[in-house]
Image (cartoon, each protein chain N blue to C red):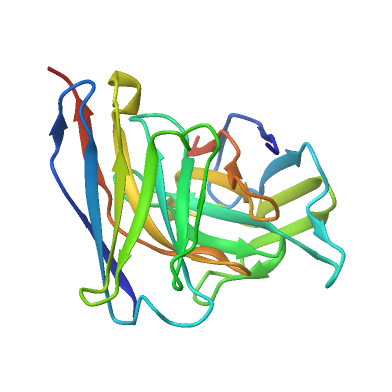
Length: 113
Length: 119
């Protein structure tokens, strides 16, 4: 199985600050046929199911604010929230959808300081 | 807008079988290229993918659960179902169903249903 490791486990920042969450996979997530990285980011607010934010490592899902961005390739990926808002308090998960079984990172909790 | 809703018993006795159903609305479950997955989350913990079924009926399971799990499709009711046998307390979790797109992963989720394994 591909192991997904996120860092840090938690993050507390002031409103308006930049949040950076890292995700490392134990194998490359590049699909050679189309050169896309099959790495997805989700946001899970308390009491809610996860919500798709970013797919293909950097493609923003429709309706997701542009302060959320994804980057990276191969085995190292980053989710950035450019200016943290109160409504961004949540746990963020990365997930690989390159090889089954699909696997998730352990999650990163983002809070307001 | 696709919507999913899980249903099933909230309490299952140890060694028995957990059975859940996911009802899909706003779209056909048998559309081309569609996969439907089950994912679980122990309270306060992370996400574990259980398995998926293709709209044509083929299945893929997480090897960690493969000996105990089966997922089936009922196109007449626009539903898919999960069976997990020989449950233990370790299977206590919030169970989600989700649409599983090959390119965009899990784009629609149900609200989840809590299943507790206890005598």
